[in-house]
Length: 133
Image 1: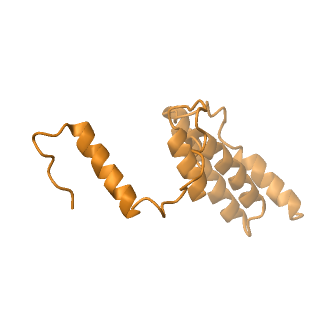
Image 2 (image 1 turned 60 degrees about the vertical axis):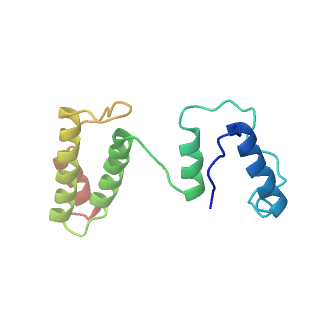
């Protein structure tokens, strides 16, 4: 429990004394990174450096919504190509087209989408050709 700073002691000397006493007790001996150089010391950092480091450590990633939608379109095309039925393929493509149209009306964050809605009839024609119909 921390005590109150005495009125007749400067803040700096009181803090320094508390740190010295803790070091003498060994309170800092088993901290992670003890005795190691400070990582990236002196390296230029952008605004979100700490967030990027934390995301890497946690195995997370972030893409702007426009890039996520581009990837989702490619995934939807692959899913539709391998769909079990024409109705399933059509539903997959119509769903992604609804998302593309919404993104065109209200552009998402990030780089431009640069994507038109998928030609559903053309994709269904390819689906039929793959199955020999």
